[in-house]
Length: 299
Image 1 (tube, helix red, strand yellow):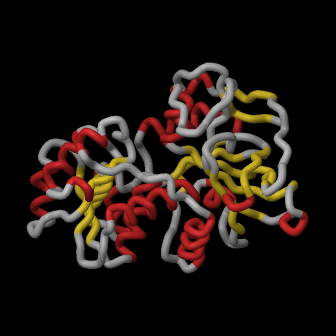
Image 2 (cartoon, rainbow, N blue to C red; image 1 turned 90 degrees about the vertical axis):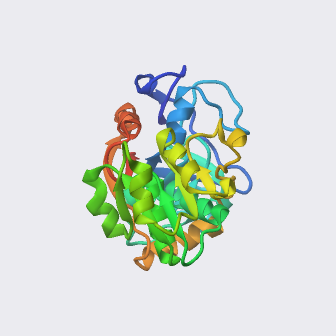
């Protein structure tokens, strides 16, 4: 089968379309004919040489940790089912094999590109808010609020009755208002701007940007256990802040899909790229520009 992968780590240019063995489903597994796969900063880190915990195996390596497609091998009752799901690697491919408990049914009204880019961002946001314990009446700052995880986090928090201040480029501010956030621009003076918007203080912060944004969070939130970073994993233990625990599940994903079906969680796909342009998809994500998700489509 065709897959977009790399034989040695490096920049986006190392991604190539490779011919690799087509995987076969074993007991308790399903094979999915992939239609779309979301692109995450996680995938870019893998391509750069980072090995996720629990991952073994030699190169070449195929990134991709969320996908949507049609089950074509596995339990007979599931054959032909349209699904979305998650794993750690291997979604940038014509076929992927995962445990059956890592997929859920795709609603008929959910577009393939939305389904392919739904699982990771939505689940990460949900887990992060759960870890931070944000509750009705509190104020949450979300850095990089217009990105894939940020888009979901803003909506899920607002749905809980939380006041959300979302940082982003001025061009994204109308989008953030539509999601229910109070937008604020990055750059010098960010700390003062947020304090002006939240004179009673900030209860928690979700950092999707790192660097100066994380430094601002440390100034704003007294309890460091209520700061979670999606990007500064290496420095989190020393700072005493949180990272997202590994808590993805089919039950969580099904709950989020239901919210989407009911119009309470929307995912914006800003760009799609064919498998042959996986390198361009990574460049797009690493630019940190644009709103919402980047998705690879598989013919």
